[in-house]
Amino acid sequence: MSNNIKIMDLPENERPREKLLRYGADSLSNSELLAIILRSGTRKENVISLCNRIMAQAKGLNGLLNSSAEELMNIQGVKSCKASQLMAICELYKRFKAFKSGDEYKISNPKDAALLVMEDMKELKKEVLKIILLNTKNMVIGIRDVSLGSLNSSIVHPREVFLEAIKNSSASIIVCHNHPSGDPTPSNEDINITMRLKECGKLLGIELLDHVIIGNGIYVSLKEKSIL
Image (cartoon, rainbow, N blue to C red; front, side):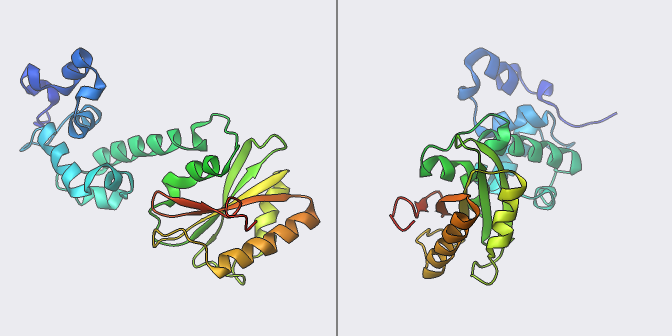
């Protein structure tokens, strides 16, 4: 029989579930919300104390959202089961914030495109190039990773970019990539790649609508800058 200290072992006025039902979810701290997900602590530590420590070691919600399973299991008291629970809830959040939620998503402006990929890209340590595939009504039909590593014209080949668009019968595409420095200011290479892709798109009949560069919570649209 497990000796883990569960939520039900806490005094009633300290139990997160009862507090949530009585006062609403917004009355709970991040640690209390996490405690409802994990349900139990360890033999030496109740679940609230464990969740306070998880939040502290992950350096808050943003850190938790970007933690790997290995990083989570390095926290004392977190083994594979709890790490899986934490990663599942974080992934659900990311999907809710992005096209992966399963809902239809229409791109009406550069901000729509930026918000679609921001959660996945804003804290990446390496440059990643993604393409957003759109139908004739500018509805998103998919997002694909095209390249990993510093962007330059020798790595980003139009063939790889437009192959995905052709395979998925896309009417148009939006190119997105991140700057790990957090500063989304376009480089000369970014601009050169964009113009090259624009010309190739014209030949193929697949319009390049925009190139959105993602920084740390901010973005630059080459369309808005009148570069594209």
